Image: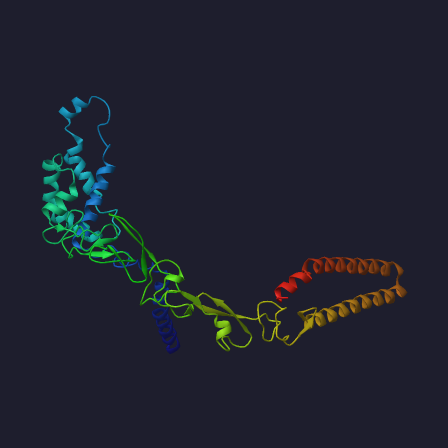
Length: 387
């Protein structure tokens, strides 16, 4: 009896431990929270109102030709009423309202509920005289937006940025109306070139600012295009001898800096800087890329015809070739031994051995010809070496 109780206790304990694990495995994955997919994102007042209006106008476009198209329009207008401004169409729009919104969905639904009376008022009374629903709701009634190029609580006019910047608070009830200039422009009206830019074109209406050359120092800028118009030189560049205004010249760090790169690397000069690139694996130190520009050959390589050649690979090939020929010899000897006891069997074995050797050599010959490295003509070698 005691053993039975122990057995039942063991089964019960096991079930209590295993069932939660099984439920965790079969339980459906937790859907992503609404915060992550943007449904509950809190948008600025003007932006949220604009999103709501866009969703409403999208519903208007979807229901635009949903009903009484064609037929006796005069009779339909008299008997059924105008579907364009009907309550039926408004209900259809409201049923799908905010469903197409991906960010600020909850805020959109709240706007719809809180301003239902204003929406109906515009729909039935002001739709014809004020077709711009955004202006009616967001600018005039809720006063959370301003017309374009206006800002602030009183919707004052924005500063003129001359097409080179944006008005701070444009279209909203916030901001100061000043210009936020685009990259390369400066000044209250974005009518000047910023530091590190120069005036490439100007007329009565427009100014065009272009970036200075990379040779020019960020703190001083330039007078015009190219490295000759730098006011001072950036790091990696040096003034050209000839007095002030002569421009800047790239410093060749590979010649000027001692040990610019680590061992087994070679230096490549860039504009205003330099790069270190690993030598070829056949080299132990080098002056450039490739096995023909090594200072000395690495271990396992030998200098032949101006190139560091893999001697270890050649030795491996020789060992493989010798082993292959010894295998062929062993097969031939085995065939001769068999020949003493049975000529017929020896003939079949000899034919198989001959076929095996022929196919193997044919395949190896084809692989070798495909893998052969192309030779470099002498005149190209001389050019690479600078001769």
